[in-house]
Length: 272
Image (cartoon, rainbow, N blue to C red):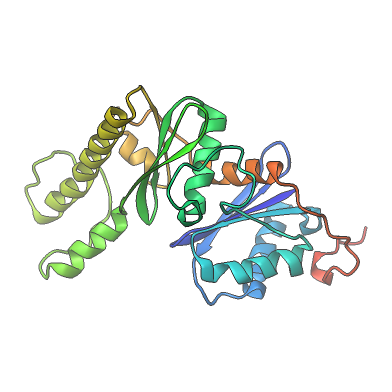
């Protein structure tokens, strides 16, 4: 089974794929100082709750935009699952061209989104990812990565608005009943929601015009379904697209399987 680890700026997502389907997905807040042992204690408890045997993990793939987190995630894979992890970066075999000026600077999540989106949806497309940043990634008909757009994330915008304006409260994200807010909170919610809808529609329109051909639009991230309700530009939402990218990348880049000679006791199957 494959352990896929998607380490973002806000959360680290762990997921297990058994070759047919995803068997579990769990997330924990990203912290640079979290040790491999801390990850293991938390993750192994979730494995037991899901009825998964940790010793069945024979592959691990890591995608991260937080370099400081990589060391302990690698140790987690090596010490607790006896797997040499595949790390998603420009130097591995992606199966497509990365047509940007500095391929090594492209975030792993953006390349993983491009890989999975092309595999599942084909054709020229734009992948919109609602994460800590809101990103737009452009993929041509051959699957080549052409670059994209990075905008401030929605939660960041809300927090900045609250911190910079003394009389404006911190608000939740939701679709307002009307564009014209008749109080402070509805007015802020309208500005955030419809402002980002306008951002999405405007950027996608400009990308399509510059590309010069029809393009599908796929959205991912926790807020994708909410914003898909507000615009017809988003044609498909896919919450697992980054994890799917890790799965596909692991299939393209097999790593050596460690010989399991001395697993920690906690990893050994329970006796019958």
